[in-house]
Amino acid sequence: AYRIGQHKNVMAVRLICPDTVEEKIMLMQDSKKDLASDLIKTEDSIFKSLTKSDLLALI
Image (cartoon, rainbow, N blue to C red; front, side, top):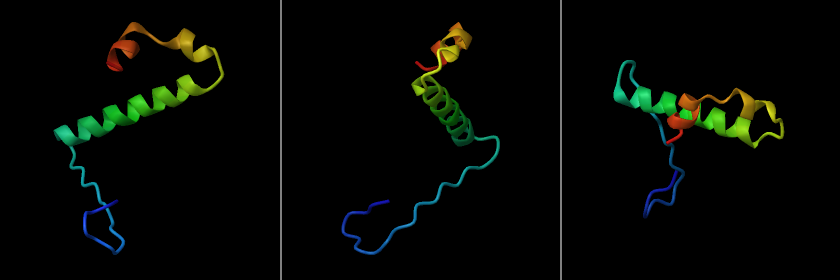
């Protein structure tokens, strides 16, 4: 992490509480990250398994 004017190392911590909007956002980000990494792979099988709801979830 970076802070303006800070010359020492900075540790960034994510505090995610259960049943919160932040948790839902984090889960959606993880899901999209996994889907994107599967799309980057050279296997064609991922394209066959995508549903309309998967594609709409990316929007």
